[in-house]
Image (cartoon, rainbow, N blue to C red; front, side):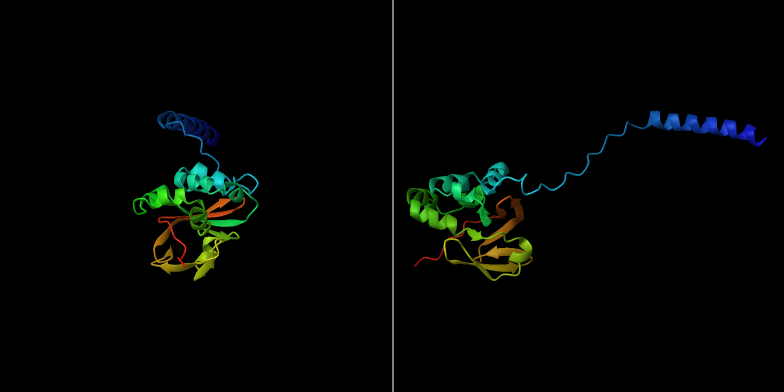
Length: 178
């Protein structure tokens, strides 16, 4: 008797399974999480900035100042990278003036670079960092955001590259004038 009950129950279970499979959409395969790139697989700072697409002005300026090869070098470097919008927000004529004065342009760009790979967990514990240009950059945490020289906010931190780290900032910072 038990056997007689099991056969119809098993058949009913097969029918229900077939109906529910037919009635539900075909599941889409889920992608496996992409592992974090290894340093060898990452591009250098210039390649990473180029791939991001929002640093065309910075890359043009780095090329004009002769700094591309340096930023492609071994490093490590930390770059506080102003976006194209940050450069566009400079007063009229400022960018043209910088591009016309290669030494000043180089000084301004090197002011955005700190030696070593300084990640966000380290930056938040600093009050200043000495730039490659030689002048200090004032660092503060205001309302949970890292702010440089009381004006530029870090909007994206820890963009890793094989030769350092990029922190995206929303304004161009200028070294102190003498």
